[in-house]
Image (cartoon, rainbow, N blue to C red; front, side, top):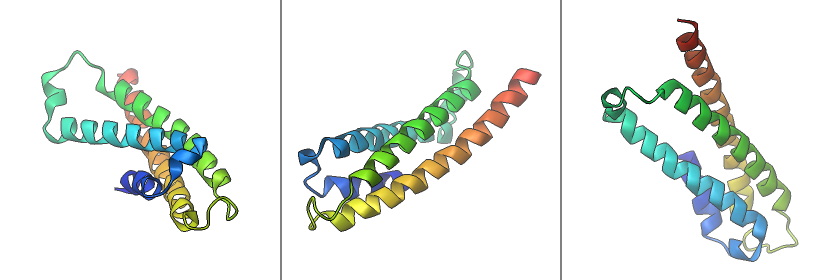
Length: 124
């Protein structure tokens, strides 16, 4: 839900005039789609039918990459928000920056828990 807020707040503005917001949109939409995909896989328990895939490693890689790229996107988003660019879009861009950092912290926590799960799998 928070990732959805990030890209919808930006998509409602003239973000295409500023390349930095294009990067933020790419990261936000890409990881939102992948998160929904993995949510469906886990809710339907499809992962139990594909035991060849190391799901703990996949989860760790997904969450780790989401954390790193979302952190970069959040920093780019925050540094691109200025009143001088377009005051009409300022509030949406500022809110998207805030939510990008919230999503980053969520992915950081998920990365931590994925790492603990991954480590417990490799120790067995």
